[in-house]
Length: 429
Ligand code: IMP
Image (tube, rainbow, N blue to C red; front, side, top):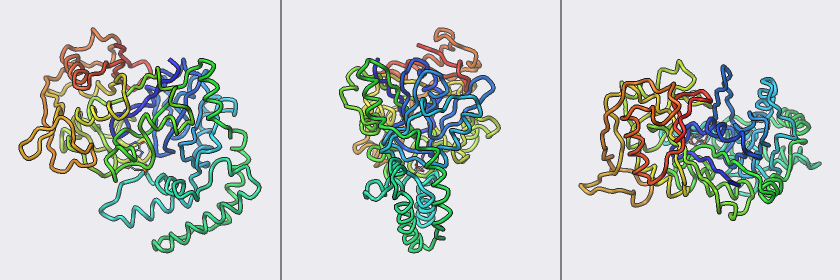
């Protein structure tokens, strides 16, 4: 298949990184098409945990070329730190293997300062952003005032950067936030330019050429469907197109590539969310602690980027069906099934109730969730430890029943189920 899209079907953190890693060995290109270093994709190989924020997780395999597409916002400092980290771990991150779109937008220290100042100003209504400058960078992109990666190659980049910081300082002053010193930023960026220049490419042309030659492209979504700027729980969303549609603009490939595409929706066996915003199936107290974990393990529910504890709850089948529609999912991948082992009863939200009326779907999508209460179907749990299981038929029958219910609710086959954080802890269906 020429194009496979891996997209988060919830509020991010579904475990996309390790699923990309599962498929990437066969891909010619693995490409990120949205977001920036707000993402946190973890892959465990043996005793090595790779935590990636910008570079596509597929780079860990030797075959694919990793692309940072034009739909991304890139903090050069974070990118260089990640390149150094990967190189230290023995991964080939030479410009032959890593390509950065000239049309991707830059995140500067001004964007990070603005992110913090704007969140402080929102007070109780804060979005709970990752603080990585994502929103302000996309704001400048939409305002047509931002710097792009390709600008780093132009002779007047320093002047443009200085003007950008000065403009941000005027806004920071209005927000009563500390302003930034221009000169140290210019010096740091001068170093970034020389290191990043060899990676800059027309990644749209290169990706289209691979597709034209019958090669395969694996598009790695960041965040999740419900954080999409257009289709998520607005305004508690990120500022990019996280959904499958974003692949075409975010990589610069034509929609005809979608013809035979596989669109894999990655979904936890329960639901999590970081940051503010509605979460109808959220649970609290002991059950929340049970699902979240204490933080002692790297796979517990604490943000890879920010370390914040994630909110947790039962799987929301109404929102999952919405993700199927918005992305045109062709299959599901269910992660973290092992976490449910030992729970006596599982709940799956199959509809909502409001003013005595039952809704299978939300009238205005997930933007309007006020007053909607989940309607749950209950399933018996299982006590068996599933972490060593590799074949579907060896899964406890109660686990199969639960997975079957998810499949029926969404009308999609479940292709993979993860039963632990290790690369091999996957059950194929
Ligand atoms: P921003 O992307 O930093 O602007 O944050 C906007 C919202 O998206 C906040 O609620 C964040 O917690 C959430 N968010 C951003 N990136 C991720 C992610 O990779 N996983 C989960 N939530 C995220």
